[in-house]
Image 1 (cartoon, rainbow, N blue to C red):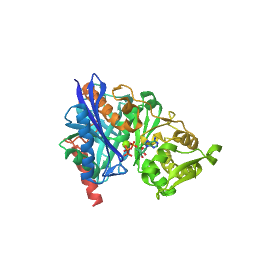
Image 2: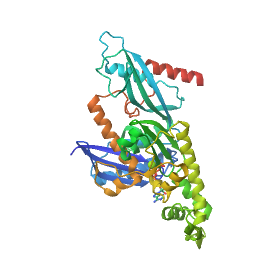
Image 3: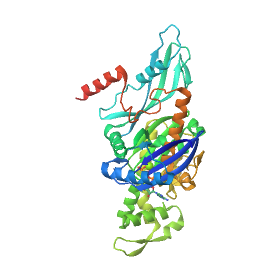
Image 4: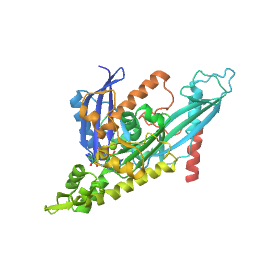
Length: 421
Ligand SMILES: Nc1ncnc2c1ncn2[C@@H]1O[C@H](COP(=O)(O)OP(=O)(O)OP(=O)(O)O)[C@@H](O)[C@H]1O
Ligand SMILES: [Mg+2]
């Protein structure tokens, strides 16, 4: 038996707990629990009691299947309160030896993470992309090198203090520790993107029930992340309203038909049978369904592509867009996106190196939870290799939750409180 690592994806439509046995970096799924999610809206906990109950069901089911007691988890976070920025920091090495120490790395990260964030937000990740020693770029571990000037480029993810706190509360209510809170699209990327894509430039879109999570990678590292509050549930709602059918019937129609292609001459004539809210059976043109789904997809992807354009990445993602999350299964979606935006689009492929429960490994619905476990495994390997580099892999572990650190951090906090009253 190796080490037990548990991922907990608290999604808008479902909560999933995945128990894995990890030995020599081989991940074997030994238990899975899933429960319908109550108490979340657009990726954010709005009812602690209900969310706790959903998590409890998923955890208990996973415990029974794996025959282990879950003590700690890696939990995902999303919601439109998430903000991301890139920053850099510089320190000088003034000692005689000029040998860079762990302390210098700590100092330079402290400098880089000292950005102005709103007083109701906290840091979730500070991810060092590269270190630069006396102008030499692309260094992953500067400790032991000699130089007089150490720089770091970081990607910083922040989120609402309340949202982070609520996730932790729901889990801790069950006597379980949150080892770390991880940005959902970052987690998903560990499950479905390969190194070559991340190197070349790629946008990941995890389209779930309540949120569409975007993450852009280039040169192997994350450059941008954003959570949009539109996803599959909105499409189902539109169908329910537009066709006057129940939510369940709308969900059935959506999953069965997907986005009918209007250019397809057959679709002009083709009809589908639906059951209206007054229990009548009725035939409607597929064209009508397309007219309902399409504007919502346009809204969603115009927003998403707009975000990518705003940060100047439209032409910097030659590997295109990789789709995952339940809504990525929508029939006709990759074709729609690639035609409208003239970009290469594909659905995420099955993650490598994960054993057990094929159905789970292969479904895009589980890429976040699998990614949480992969993230945990890789960050543990990193720590093993480089030592416990300060806050490189995320900040919100239950024992080390804090915002800025050090004197600079205290000053920044003071300033931000001061200026915002
Ligand atoms: N075959 C399918 N075609 C279209 N949509 C689908 C299909 N299967 C699932 N979905 C949709 O996927 C959505 C759920 O996806 P997922 O499980 O990734 O969401 P979640 O993780 O609970 O939510 P979020 O990540 O937004 O908080 C639902 O809206 C569901 O209707
Ligand atoms: Mg999700």
